Image (cartoon, rainbow, N blue to C red; front, side, top):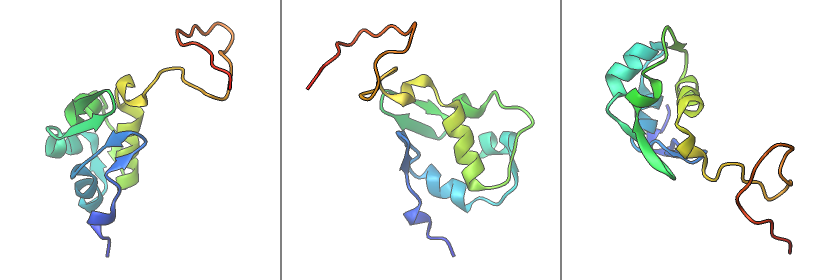
Amino acid sequence: MTDYNSVPHRELGVEFGELAGQIEGHSYPITNEELVEEYGEHVIEFPNGTESVREILGSFANETYESPSEARQAVFNMVDSRAIGRKYYSDRTPPAIGERREDQQLSF
């Protein structure tokens, strides 16, 4: 038996909140349309904003999720760019050819 309280509510900067356990506890397979109908008004939070499940998954058509991990992955794939934090940030590499960075390069 799965303990839905142990399901991570925050993954990869995306805060699912109570939706994490609801997705985990839902019976599968489920279509995207059914998922949006059931959970569309739930708000997902991320570092630079929020979006509803309807805003995130509303444009998917003819998708069917076979498991909770597939449903979560769809959210990760479609979430707004505000969820990624600082764009182009890397403390490991210099800017790529053609990449413009506004930040200053720091050396320690």
